Image (cartoon, rainbow, N blue to C red; front, side, top):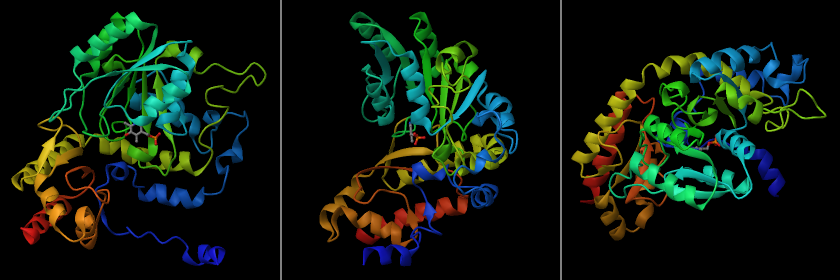
Length: 380
Ligand SMILES: *Cc1c(COP(=O)(O)O)cnc(C)c1O
């Protein structure tokens, strides 16, 4: 019986103990402190124990207030911060607040699908800034300016969104220059830092942007789903406007957002996250080392070169050729890696794939490189 089965299995995690190179997961692994907090605060609505004002961000114990109103704004170098239920919810809150009927959002074509969908949900049109194509896929300042100019002729631009870095190539665009151009057009800028906030140092003010969004489960060692939203002072009264009837409830937050283990794990990991961000240069160096070794194996790294982020996209013509010949076909790479306890490249991919070695030791990095070398050797 299905029901029985459900009880019996207790959902064992098949990838436990594996080296994880899935970009989605490398920055979201819990710290020990967060793991303890998860157990302690796992019950539903646990965070509401000592809520007296009806506002999540005003809870003093555990110190949500300090986190949201002191620590986060400092970390993002912005004026006002909130936690949301994810990066996408943060984006939607901003887009929905700024939406005007028939309006447009200009975003880079490397944007995450959730940016596009958030704009659609708010009833807006989307104009995409093309990238430079193979092999760099860069979003240039010039193209961004061009698309702004073209879109301005079509209608009212309510927001520009720039993905920093994008989730395919890990490319870091010149966000500051782009923001300066947007400012010439009087268009506010949202920086989607789902792969930045919690991994690398960010500063909303240095970027000259208006909003910044991060993802707790992607890059801040939180169980999630949880996101962070930072903005400039001037946007507070628009994006964080309050209900007419429930005077302390912020409409776009639907009153309260992360309501339990999600925010406690985020806060428990935060001191570690703040420290690890300082070691970002080591991560970039490690990524470049890895990319160099892959290239020696005939596997090409696409996107920014030298690379500036742990998320890397590879083009492996040699693995693709093997997949055409072997019995297991295109699933051979997944299986070979799995047999070596490496997890994170999507089953079926051989020619193009992305990965991240964030947080791995050099020993583990070499283990992964050797795995690729062995696999290529085995089928040559
Ligand atoms: C993962 C990702 C998101 C989605 O983040 P959530 O917190 O799960 O909503 C958004 N943008 C980019 C670039 C991402 O990589």
